[in-house]
Image (tube, rainbow, N blue to C red; front, side, top):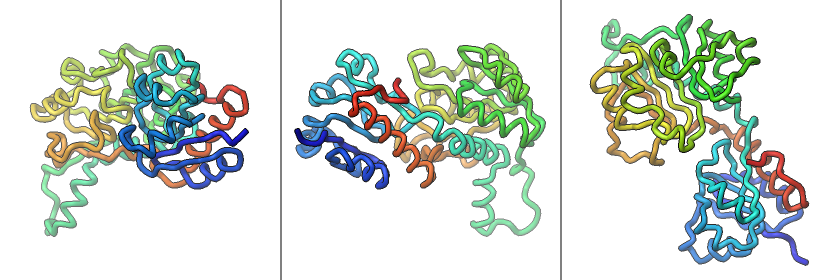
Length: 319
C-alpha cells in the first residue's frame, strides 16, 4: 500500500512539509489553486489530507475529494471550512489554536497604538519632508494608558491582549463574551458586561470574536452609534464581523474618532475601498500572526493534526 497523499497549499512551511514527507507523499501548491486547475483537481481527488490557509472547503470541494480524511487549517480561524459538510462526510477539521496567541496579540495591540497615536500618518509626515517646525495640532493622538479597553470575544488572543493592556498600560478592561471568564477577571481585573454598555463606556473597542452566523456584522451602524465620539475601533477578528459601510460612515460622520483594521470582508482589499481613503485610519494586510517563527510553528502544529488522523487518531485541535 502506497503512502497517503497530502495536498499542501498557501504558506505551509518547508519544515512542516518535510515532516509530512517522512511518512506521506506531499504535493505542494504555493498558491491555493482552484479546482479548475487540472493538476490541483487531480491532487485533491486522491488526497487523504489537505493542509493550508484560507481555502474554501465546502460541499462542492468535498465532492471532488472522496478520499479526504482531514482538512487542516494553518490558522486559528476556520470560517473557510464548512464544518457541517465535513462532519456529514466523516472528515475531520482542525485549526492551530494557542500557537499564535502572543504573536497576534502583539500585532493587534500594536495596531491599537498605531491608530491611537497616528503613527503611520506621522511617519509619512516626516518622510514627505513636511516636518519643519512643531507638528500641527490636527495631528494630535490620544492617550492609551489608564483608558478603558472593551474586548469583544475573550478567547485566548483576547486574554493575551487584556494582559498587555492591563500590565503594560494600566488600562481598565471590559469584555463581552458568550461565557464568563473568571480566570481572566482575576488575572487582569477584567469585568464582563453586555455588548451595549461595553460600546458606550470603552475608549477602545477591539473585536476578537470568530466569524459565525451570530457575529456576522455584529459591529453595525447601531453599534458604532453607541460608541464614544472619542473612541478608537480595532478589528483583529474577521472582516465579516464588521459592516464596513457602517464603519466608513462612522468615521466620515465622526461617530468615532479613529480605527485600525487588520482584516477585511474581501482580501486582498480592493484598491478603491473607501476605508483606504482616510489617512488617519490604519489598514494592515492581515498580519496578525505573520512572523516567520510563528508561521512555521503554525504549519508544524497543522502537520501534527494531519499525522494524528492518518495514524488513526483524532486530531489534537479538532473543531
